[in-house]
Image 1: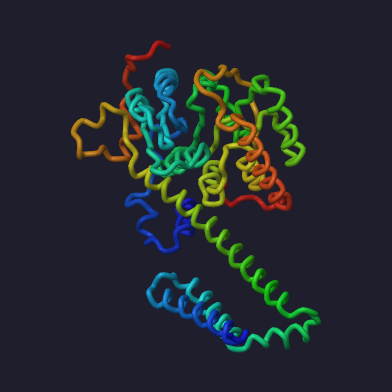
Image 2: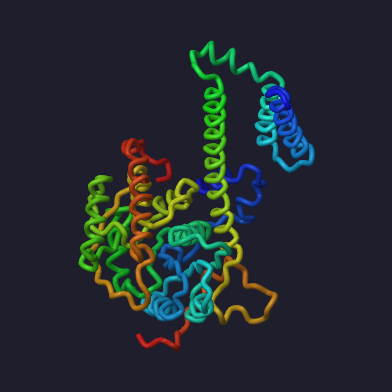
Length: 262
Length: 139
C-alpha cells in the first residue's frame, strides 16, 4: 500500500492505474516463506547450480535479475527453476537487487534474501541468515565472512566504519536477508540512485532506525571471475570516492524519526 | 571598420534570433524555453547597450567593466550546468525505476512453464513454479 504511494510520487505524470495492479497483491498461502533474489551479469557458469541448490534445499521461489547478460545466464536460470527479470538497461548490482525487492513486494513476500550469482555464498547458510528475522531480533541480516577479505579491502572497510560509525564487520557482503519494513524502505525511489548494495544501503536503513545484525557464514572462494568492485585500482578509487561522498552527505541524517513503514 | 557597438549588436541579435528560432521550432522543452528566452532577451539588450555594464561596474565598484560581464556570464553558466546535473539525476532515477518496472512486467517463469511462444505465463503465477525435481543438479 505504502509502496504504491511512494511509486506514484515517483511518476507524477503516470496515471494512477499503472501504479496499482488491478488486483492488489494480498498475502497468499506460502508467502511467509522467503524469496531468493540473485542479481546476475554473465554468470552462466554458476547460476544454474546456485538456483538449483536453493530450489532443492529450501524450495524457495528464486528470482534471478538478469543485468543485461550477453551469455546464457537467463536461460540457465530458468532451466534451473528460477523466474528471470530481464533488465533492458544495465543497472548494476544494486539496481538489479532493487528490481528484485520491488518484485517481491509487489507479489506480497515478507522476507527477501540476496545472494551473489558467482557461487561465493553458500545457500546452505540461508537458514542461519534468516534466523534473526524470524526471531524479530533484526530487520536486516548480513552474512559476514570477514576472513575472505584482502588487506586492502579490510582497510577500506575500517575506513568506511570510521566514516559512518557503522558497527558492522563485513559491510560489502551481498549475502543478506531483509524483512518487510527493510524491503519497503529499500524499494523506494530514495534508494534508486545507489550503485552498490553496501554502505549506502546500510545508511538508509540506519536512518529509518532499522536494525542490522551480522551472522558469520562460510563463503566459497569465487568460482568464476572476480569482484565487480575490487577489480582495478581505477574502479576502486572511483568507488572509494563515491562512497565517501555518500557517507559525508548522510552525516547530518543520523537522527531522523522512526519510519512509518512498520 | 565596425564600431564595437555594431559588433556587439550583431552578436547579440544573432544569438537572440537563434534561440528564439529554436524555441519556436519546439526544440526546447517548456522550462528550458523560458530560461533561454530570458537569455536571448539579455543578450539582445546587451548587444544594443553594451555600456550597461560600464554603469553597473561603477555601481558595483568593479574597476574593469568587461571582467564583470565575464564573471556574471560564467556565474550564469555555472548555475545552468548545476541545474542540468540536478535534472539529469532526477531523470536517472526515473529511468532506473522505469527499467525495473519493465523488467518486472517482462518477468519470465521457469523454462518448462513457457510451452507455446506468444502466450507468456502470467507474471503472478510464474513466481510460484510447481516444485520439481531438478535433474541436472549434483548437490
